[in-house]
Length: 57
Ligand SMILES: [Zn+2]
Image (cartoon, rainbow, N blue to C red; front, side):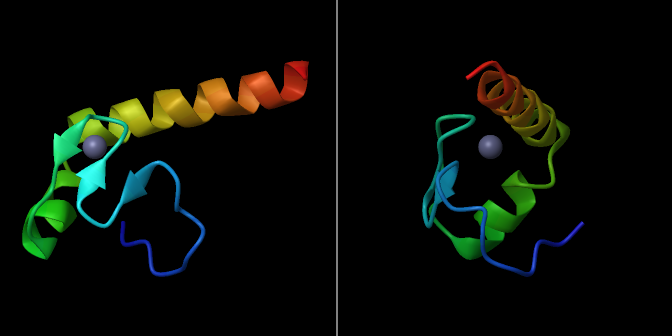
């Protein structure tokens, strides 16, 4: 699961994951973080909430 394209901006920045409130100092740390299940589960939940909110509005 590698995200190659742009368009994921907003939820996480270069050195910080806003979903998990985790500091990601190095690129290897960032790559590893985005593959851990806690992150992907939270990301899925956040995306789901965002989509629901979009439908209600
Ligand atoms: Zn994360």
